[in-house]
Length: 553
Image 1 (tube, rainbow, N blue to C red):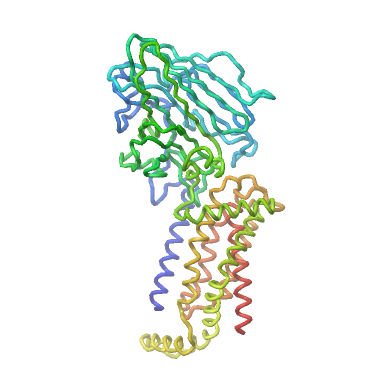
Image 2 (spheres, rainbow, N blue to C red):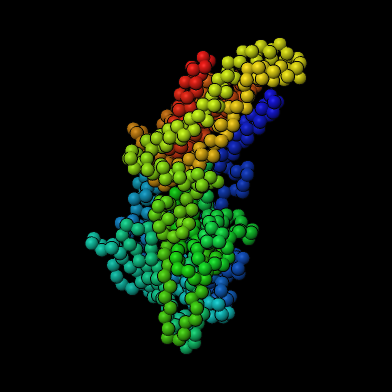
């Protein structure tokens, strides 16, 4: 048993060192041991790659491929008139070249790296490509229809949300393409991160057409600016249908063309996800649609939802409504927008536990009015809920500590007889009624709850810019003076002192070294996560000390 425990400790210790070194490499801009080199921004003039469904570049024959969404490196797209729209929530820039949304600034959401700036979600620059595009394709080979490369004219009107008004609209009218005209109307609403997008297909040609509307998000494969190297969250496309539910689609699987998601359904939505924020195209009416994810350029990826609009006769107009959400992952608001949209908030493997924990956290915040104290209160409640389970573990630890002198004397006496030493050790455990694994099982059973709480705190956007006390003004950022990580290290070492000393000297040394190794990571963790861990440590110390006193250890 001692050899097994020693081996496990060495494995954990070695892996910890490797992971820490790998995290430090990524933190300093070096390549990771476990992944490819960091991706570079999409080059402005790079040649487009054909996607899995034969996505062509925007050439004169681009629309000859029936049902193919026209794509090319977004940074290379020609620019038309730039229309700036400002509301109380967003500042948006729309390009009259196809009516694309090419820039979106979230007003009031401060950038983590530069608090003088707001978060920018959509962008088209040398450093970043992230766009929302819509247009028409045809099910008939050779048919040409207006798409996001077609020049459009912006109809004159207000561009700023005026006092006393609820919304502001921007209307684009395309030039006719073989007699077919596309009118695209954006509606920005006060207090909302959602943008209504109405598409009117006007058939001015002399024959019936079979248009399909695509709603597309295009993004480079780079992580968001300021993403931590010491913990990771998902960045990339996602799709949802009632059948398959929520599916993350990693960039690497798009490259390999082996991503798993529903290709067709009569419901669902598409999204582009990153830490704290997301964008999504939503069509909540039940109608057929197709989902496509592909690589469309160098380090450039798209996810699209294609909706057949049926036959449009000559002189007829067909209208399709859609909603573009672009904003913070506020769980309750996402739930109200579309089924399953709240799942863009990444809770890791323990989503079933994280949801109720987040619900309880928000209730505590409603009472206490401070997210920091809500975290403390939630950990206290968890400790109370698991009190008797923890008490069992700590009693086992206390008994181990009480018989430790006897174990040490026996080990010294039989150090040259390992087999007899093992037999004698098991005899002592039986006589003293001590289970050497009795302290492990209760802690193991609680781990899913505390891992779930970790993901709640890591993914909750409400922690951004949320103050706790004194110098902690943002629970989503690291402690600027590293006070909380130092306190966490001290409490972790004090816990080791309270625990029984392992009979193996090497194990004993490692029990002191491991808290120091793990503490390195906490120097770069968000303050809210470190606060949660400190609270857990302090409550554990209090319970252990109380049980040790009762047992006279």
